[in-house]
Amino acid sequence: MERMICVCIGYAFGLLQTGYLYGKLHHIDIRKQGSGNAGTTNALRTLGFKAGLVTLLGDAFKCVFAVLAVHLIYKNSRGDILPLLSMYAGMGAVLGHNYPFYMKFKGGKGIAATAGLLLSTTTPVMVLICLAVFIGIVATTRYVSLGSLAVVVIYLLEIIYQGQTGAYGMEANYLYEMYGIAALLMASAFFKHRENIKRLLHGTENKISVGKSK
Image (cartoon, rainbow, N blue to C red; front, side):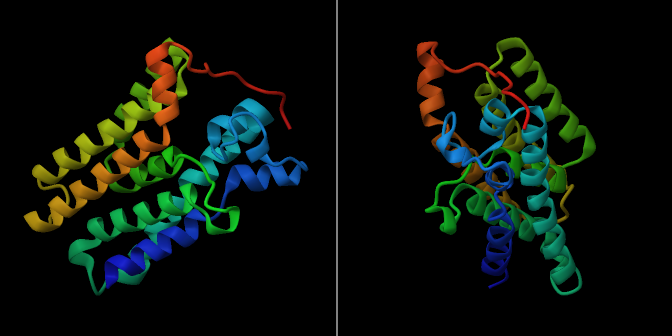
């Protein structure tokens, strides 16, 4: 029961579509611009650096706040499995971001929201590793999609590593649940980026560019 509640909490936070709302403030429907995606990259390309930064932070921290809400609710009653409940909240936030019901289930691709979960469930060193890999790939190739996909793979490996080294202090069956959620988030990211992957394979993927600031 706790798991479903945490998913619902996360989904509720995930419904806050930062890029879409930012665009609406400027009388623009971001879903009708650029790639038609409501996430950070399209906000950056179509609305400029400020919009991209606001969207990134908003979409990441809505996941952080979802995890914090779960901690406040369950820290006394289910403190033994808080890392697992945090993962469920994060999964819910990604689902809310990717499939917001009030936008006909057309949201973003979940990378920024997953970054918020990464901030909430891994160590600062692990966060820096993901950040360094992402920046390195994007700076070298200018493909945000490639950097994003690399990060979700590393995040899965980090969760497994931390679980196997005792960082979460949970029994094996709970750890395997965490690994499964991280794997599902990785699979979801690859699914949402399937068109990007096709373009990467054919050498036609769009490189990062910054639109006029709004």
